[in-house]
Length: 451
Ligand SMILES: Nc1nc2c(ncn2[C@@H]2O[C@H](COP(=O)(O)OP(=O)(O)OP(=O)(O)O)[C@@H](O)[C@H]2O)c(=O)[nH]1
Ligand SMILES: [Mg+2]
Image (cartoon, rainbow, N blue to C red):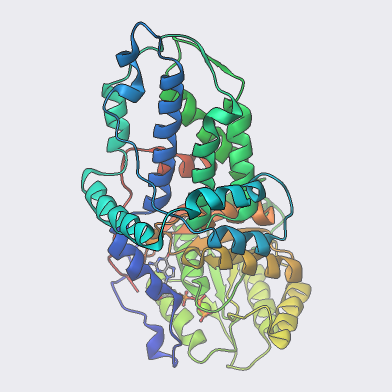
């Protein structure tokens, strides 16, 4: 396929645009240099270091104390004063009364940190800012390299108790909440870590760092392992029935529905499938033209009606067009809508009822963090979504939505939008995410634009 011409498709050309959530990404890029999941990686790396340190310090022998990891010039992170606000807020959101994290919000904890003055807190926060800027220079996983060079065998077997690691897990909980990881996900992750680490014998033959990394990886795998959807298998199955696979994209305004449709169409064309787009956003000014511009770039056909036409009718026509011409896939755009907009939510229900798509894909903006999860839940309640595309992940240092959304709604992430080129759509799977979070490379996506 011929590469699409570099061209700018700016929605401003088509409509009076609202302030866009994407603007937030510049803040992330400023802090983390646009490193995907950089902040989350850093938090996980810190946890691994601290847990490893706990194991070494418990495994040191009286005769040879300096062999211990704890004494081997390991830098211990200074924690800034964290407010309990994030935690309380998220707890309220989740409505969960479970123990676990809730326990941490106990007064005891508050008193312990509460003895510090505001000035102390400010100073610590400032310290952390300078410290984190410096840390950026040596890279997030350099800490791992430090621990690797000073790795020693344990002096004796170690069996960790809950008390041994409680403080580390408490810090991890706060940090994950701060990274916009959903409350239930944080609770599950920490519980899983505890189950794996507490009471397990770690012997001299074991590598304490490997033990902790594996425990954390397993915990993350558990969270991400939703039943996956193989989109290509679905297309193949529909092909055998001489029918197109119909995929409808839904979500709130500006999350990247139209862009993701164009990226997926590009990917499917590259794989040899024929695709038609349905201009089902008949609501927003300029939406049809925007889709047509993309379609021209990637050389696919668009089925459209007039602005204001019935969205279900447009998509229905596109399906008939695909059936008549043996086209493999129909990708249907729809208008962005807030779940509170009753009329538009009724419209999307009608679209689904009339067109009976094979997949309803919710498109969420990774930068919206926990809000993306709430939106996904609302759309799932309204139209029963099958899977998720998370966009703007290239600018997402926090990683909270990517880690939480599938678990929170019980539906898999299918793709991640990672930039503003047609090829910037990553197929999501658990290994991909685990590699990105624990790999040594810093993943920085191109800021080049094709639209
Ligand atoms: N960096 C980055 N930008 C993206 C990504 N996906 C979409 N965008 C940008 O997000 C903006 C909105 O994308 P659209 O595809 O128009 O969003 P939409 O959901 O169709 O918006 P409405 O039709 O208004 O509801 C555009 O400027 C896109 O270039 C992504 O993965 N990474
Ligand atoms: Mg759109």
